[in-house]
Image (cartoon, rainbow, N blue to C red):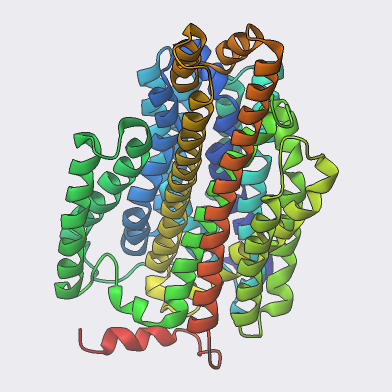
Length: 531
């Protein structure tokens, strides 16, 4: 009866059901990637978290995801993608429940870690599930829809998170996760029972345990070190030791992958310039997205800039989110038969152009002057989100699509982690240099100078404003203007970093995507070549 029902459903209808299941889960994953940024003040007040603790509310999620996504993707190839996907939904739901009912900061961080592990399983298998369930001629469209949904969820996350935190409760963010996951789980049961997704498990394949350990010791400590470096210091043991472990694990991973008959990460695929570009392009996309997103959101909410609320800052980014969504849905439909060289190059170039244009933004800029620049960035991100995964996965044999999906998504997550860190580093260097000049301009030996120097380094914005208000009017006016200009310069630094990364990606696309479009699964030939 089940087989008959399955046969009566067209392949296109099956693909739509699988798309609905994966789309809901990607909404949850993308939403939690950014929504939590807008409820950090609520979490700080609720649990009395330190700045370092707040940073780890975000970092725990991204570190767990980046570390595990490749491993769980490979497990999906061996044990079955649908089982791993169900596991991801359950683990993410457990993490959301822990965060929802958290009574202290430790319970919250454990919940965020579980969410990150669940996100790795969902992200690592969703695209390969969708690819397996969709006829070849329709894959470009559904891949574009998948990328569009991820981008839209990331874009609307701050709006929904800010609305929940302001009007309901910060806990509503995690309650929404549970509701959506219950719906996705119900659809997943239907998909599994009616066998909408073919069984693509690898017969006789063995899991590469040494490779998994090497991956864990590479991505885990590296992500930790990058997240800890800005707050804990780049010369601190808690930063240097993980970096050393990651460096040694890199060597081990290469050796293990070369010697294994069925490695966790097939490094030979990276010899194919288009697969390499897909991975590098997703890294650049994640890097620029978070380098821009985190610091644009902060700038929008700054009292000395736009002074928006968390909801207003989320709404301000809507031109980017909507243009990214529209382009992600439409671009693959028109570009699927052609080489992706020029579309990907133009997409990365559009991002670079948008970031460079945003460098003219300052504390006196009106929103009408920047919304169209956000549209340009959104167009570029929409092209990259929708085309780059397809660019890489079409080259792989069916049995390695899960592995390829995991690698490409690991690049996205790791790029996001590094983008937030490097953007923050650029901002902090600019601020430190500017603060030294501001403090040096104050009258030497005055109590106000010592108090302000301490407040600028360690105090809150309200403390700084109080000190400035107590100064001589002419001095306070000059100082306030200098601090506003310093904030503008810090934002510009983050935009420069994002623009440079996008330009590097554009050059890579021009170099690596030359020549005719290779046939499907052509990267399989590389695994038959000698190591």
